[in-house]
Image 1 (tube, rainbow, N blue to C red):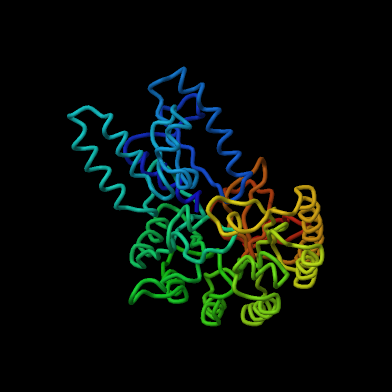
Image 2: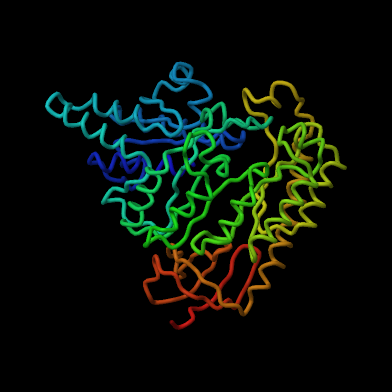
Length: 428
């Protein structure tokens, strides 16, 4: 979602005549978009922000914009006192403060035209690419903003506000515009993406939206994330299986394997219910890959509770596990009412144990692709190799002198590892 927000603001500035700078030292405007979902992310953002102060001192006309969840936490007044070298503060998904600041700095003759341009840019929302930005094979497309679920540890409702589904017609328009600029895949985004449309009267729900997006001729692939187990319906799973353009990859976090920890997290399901859901996903979508999120070291997580998470991951053999160590976030239930009682060293031990287990699991799963032909949508080039993704979201590399950008090609896999596949193009 932060990538989508950054793209939107960058695109807005390009539509208003700005161009990308090679680096911070060469820029007239610097935007630092921040994430604070974990303490490490907030620390990184603050470190980068402090590093920009000498640039501002050496170049007073430089405009610095602090954007995103860090502003949503503290508010403008508090942040202005802490960081007086920052010119503009804007919350998540909100390019307006910076655009208006730049408009006010324009001379009087330009002001009216600038205001009209800003209104047009803001009305375009997320999806209309600027001509200078160039084609991207895969584009992020937010469809649900904010979240109203309020898990005990999660800061998102306090940073990004209540859950708001976006209008389906705008989503379809933006997806079409993306393909006209060269995109061949869209990734639908939402904190709980499978709740799309539930807050809008007469809105299509996610299964219907997927079917409508699949009618866009130039669109080759559709993905969506992240889902919540409580809202993963059979209707949605059957639509994924039915639509050839919707990729068979489901992101559905477990967060913890112990029922007491899940209850304290306010997740709303049990270990057994999650296992049953994984079985149902695999039954309804043949060949599906499944990704999950796990937090270790949540308050009160005993060694026995952690081992239930370890056993669940070992038993289910999921394709992806995004791992995190718990850190209390301001204004969340767990920060206010639960003691952060797991030592940092122990959190890291548990993190490493799951990391090692998942590396072993994925390494074994990927061996099944050795010698197989898989379709790969190529997104770019890294050094001398082209890279892209399989339908199940595995990263694949090939050596080729062809320009493969945006092409959907068959690749024969001749090497596998835990994090990627390497192969060769199968002649068309």
